[in-house]
Length: 291
Image 1 (cartoon, helix red, strand yellow):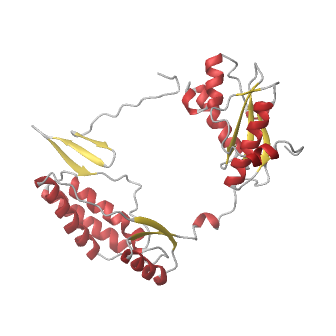
Image 2 (cartoon, rainbow, N blue to C red; image 1 turned 120 degrees about the horizontal axis):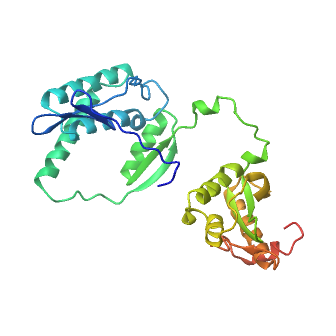
Image 3 (tube, rainbow, N blue to C red; image 1 turned 135 degrees about the vertical axis):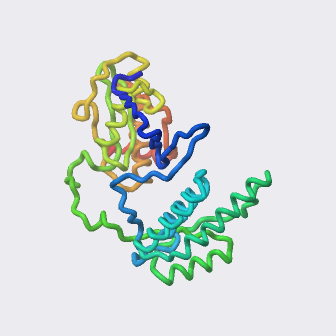
């Protein structure tokens, strides 16, 4: 076991213990179950008046009803849970009748699955992404269904866009682009690209080394297999080769820098996938002084 892994032990109280979203009750010759909710739970989901598609608004309600049907609750506890879900609907300005609709659907599906081994044949459908724009998008979604397309609604606005950034976007540590990692004990280098930030990606390589996971990082595989120094840090072992936000351009630049590294006899490139993009254009680009 790794020394950073910690275990905790929870002991039952009053012959019951909470496991995930279920309370397990110990009885004479069997176990009973109830739905468990944390004390901090406020039963707030996507509000019915919010600018989201109906599928998004009622997805949480469908999940709650599905759980109430498939967890082996007593009849009294199940009725209490369904009543509780209806109260959640009213709190979030959603239709209470939706609970009864999902209840009938999941009970029917459960009944069919218990009395037959046949599986439902799903039609081949394709997903399409639509930017949600109120009633217009709902009508377009119905039109897509007529042609065998499943619309996936995407909301353009979110609270995160209204909040100020907690970091300096001009800081290269948070930028996207192509980077190079260098070994402390030899001339080996690893070249990669990231869209999540250079420091964030470096931390993933660093954790792979610390946790002895060579399959998670080619750079970590080199360090672990060669027995070289594991004392790597962002400032000394990471070099930013190019800043680029666009994915295809990053991959193209990555291919260029990898090819340049492979052609350089003074260093050893430890990339497993040598050329993300291998084309005559990359060969030409590598001849330019810019690269």
